[in-house]
Image 1 (spheres, helix red, strand yellow):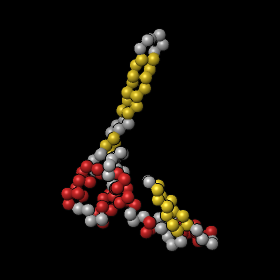
Image 2 (cartoon, rainbow, N blue to C red; image 1 turned 30 degrees about the vertical axis):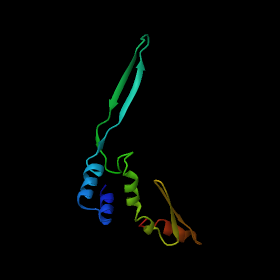
Image 3 (tube, helix red, strand yellow; image 1 turned 135 degrees about the vertical axis):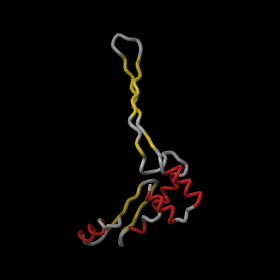
Image 4 (spheres, one colour; image 1 turned 90 degrees about the vertical axis):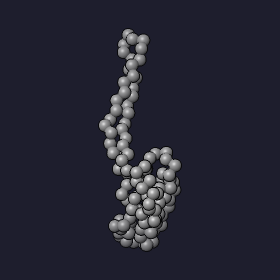
Length: 119
């Protein structure tokens, strides 16, 4: 979340809007996993439903799934990514996927560019 908050800050989002993102969308969110299964004991005509819950964990990355602003926040986060592609490379973005394509004449040079620190 800190990375996304930095991006929002660099995009000059501040004041009430910044506070809204930090309090509602990005901070202090928790989730747990629910597991439910049905048991049928031999000789019984009834089914028994067992439900188990994991412990609640703090969500440290991402935005709420299905949120209206999720796609917009994702685009804000990706805003600087194309500028980090090394020379001779290109980037393809689609929905929530990103691919970096690097080509060249020498395999060693391609490998070095592909593992560039900033990518």
